[in-house]
Length: 169
Ligand SMILES: [Zn+2]
Image: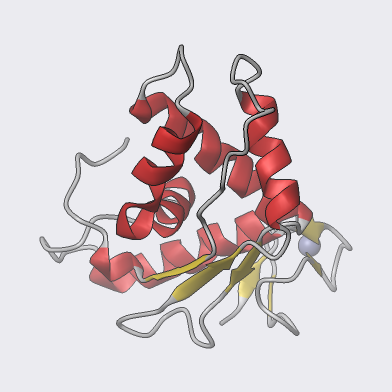
């Protein structure tokens, strides 16, 4: 799959999709999230008329990955932040994980071909302590002296499996 440089608008074939790239024409850096966004957009484009498919967004895919199998609720209950409901909690953690992917302390494995019908993305918390401390920082009111187990290990998700939801934009 080719990537398009947002700066000079030229397309090129990345060496390893999902690792930060440099545009061979203008040297602009193209990060992991920008690549994910392009993958999802290119995947969606030929399927845009299908009523059973919602346009997948970066944050929605990440949220589906880390909350899969009830992990989101379990983490919420384990932390029990006093001033934050589950919706906001999910949103905050998703943004933190997105940052982790960009910075490399959360690993997002891209499918070999992101344009197949059922591409599977895989999320790995290679550094659970880092993840735990990032979550800790989000909720300073929580008593972190008691051990809070961060149950997330890894998850897989294809955009296809994203349930119907109100379309953004
Ligand atoms: Zn460029």
